[in-house]
Length: 323
Image (cartoon, rainbow, N blue to C red; front, side):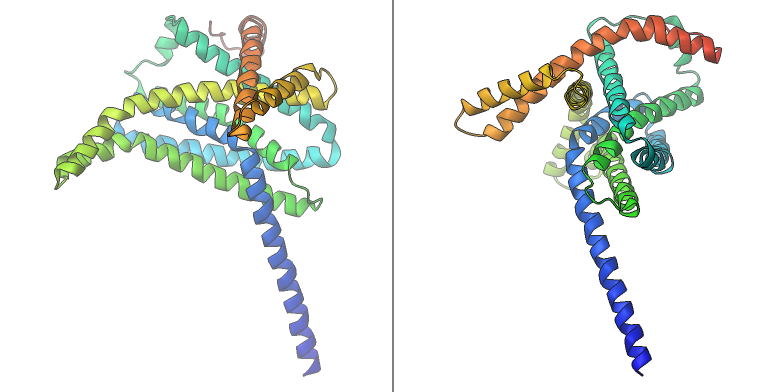
């Protein structure tokens, strides 16, 4: 009997430790998710464009394929890679994070340039020929997963940076929770956004009251506007998040602290001059200048990427570089 009681005491002690670990994982995951919110917004804003131009029946399957690719990026590739770096080469994490931030700046600046000065490209148009929807879908999904990899790397690295627990298993569990939760939230929201017009059409066709039919018509009319807004927000978020990561990395690595310190002082001065919402004003000013820095960096990277890096990669892979 005494042996059984001792065993029950041991089981109870193990259960308490397990419960505490679950609480630690949940708390760390919530903190990490909040820290990575800016990149999450970027991810949610960028993704809807990848289903533009497809039939309604292909929208959800495409989002499902992208979400599976995103989970693979986070859990199968990035999680073990980041933990290995954290263990054996922690000094490499910040430079890699800055490289990803620079890529976001390049992507955002390139989208802005193309929006302001659109130009036709015969090869791109041929590659996206609407007569070949299967090829178009494969291209879109591959492009979405590639962009997601960069954003996921930022999310997972930011999450890892705020996990204070030194236990590698708790770090792994926290990163897994963050990766799965953010993927579900982002792509669930994207699925709802892209199907909103279909929901509106259904309400118009089957609504029993004028109010419901009116709401449905409003959803149908409002979706093109919402998608344009999301595209704009996604571009701005790329520049803001990318600029913030690079500026913070320059300050942390002591390579060039001036941008971080200057923006910080300006934000403090402006927020101190207003009587209300000082925290929001501080954030808004910081985000604005981070975005300006990101845009400048991205514009400088465009010729480097298109004239040097792109042709070099094309030469190594045997593919013709796009212009």
